[in-house]
Amino acid sequence: MEPGCRFPATEKRLSCAPLSRPAFGDPLSAAALVLLAALASAGALPPDAPLADAPPLPSFLGEDAQLASRWRALESEELHARLWYWGWSGFLGTVVVTEVVIAATTTNQGAKINAYYNIGFSGAGMLAVLLFPPAAAYGLDAIRAMPEDTDAHRAAKARALDALFERAASGERWYRSPWNHVLGLTVNAGLSAILYFGYKLGGRALLTLVAGSAIWEAQIWTRPTAARDAADRLQSGSTVQVRWMFLGNGVGLVGSF
Image 1 (cartoon, rainbow, N blue to C red):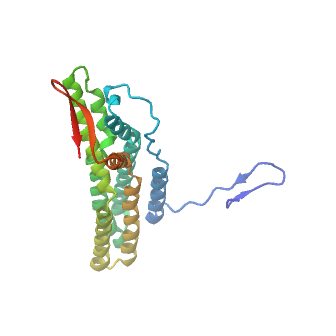
Image 2: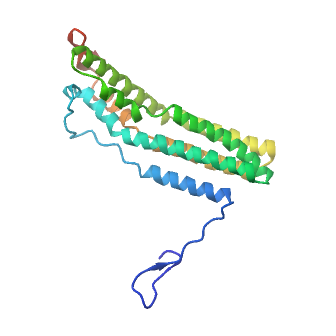
Image 3: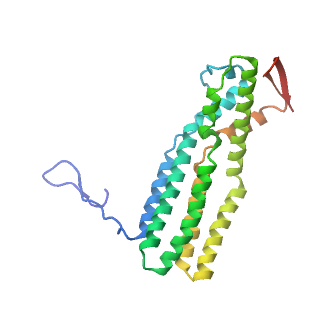
């Protein structure tokens, strides 16, 4: 039974006393609650839809197996990518606003210094998310609007889909690469070193290293990877790939080895 809950003898329903809340002025508690909420929201993101047994596409893209696989992979992660984009930009923006309030109101010099650095690093992270969203988040809208009345139109649409798919797969592959983990650890270790060696804020330095690395890792593991997975399947499916490509003056065969 949860703390604060009881069954009164004269009633058959459960009654719960409200749980105590952290003090408003405790930035550690507030930050922990925000972080837990963000991670819970990220964990609730819909999984990338499977590509098998998908209905045929109402477009010429469905006539080509590889183009259809690319389209379905991007479409399956479109909503996930948008939630990731707005979720993390909103979370980091909330951190910036919270740290601005702390810096402006606290009389604790250590908290003020820590807030200044968090404003800079969280603001940079927010801008990175806002300026470089996942390719699948909004890239499909432009392709959907492209006409397919002529061979030239269809060729341009196929090229645009291929380019978007390759960009999405490449971005997802880098995002899950060891280099991104190393980069996150380096950034947070560097900030922690500044707080520890420059200002002798040992506790805040340790908190920055742990919490900052956890947030970085959460960003990595909640980002969708359907395009990368589909690219890996297409690449490992066969060493020789041949497909139709609509050209400006007809159709042709395109092969990759």
